[in-house]
Length: 72
Image (cartoon, rainbow, N blue to C red; front, side, top):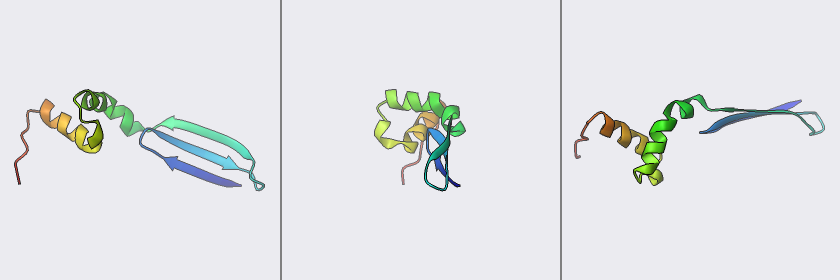
């Protein structure tokens, strides 16, 4: 038996294969951290920060907390 695990940003998926390569079982669940930040991520997308990925979430959190980042 072989198993494979995909740890993604939105899901975790596990797959079990028999010795001859037949799929025995597949399980998919949401990634907990994505679910915890989903509202912030959606707000970041609506703010036009979609291309910035993780930085977009940080920018939204900074704005919500009224934190100004120092210029370097």
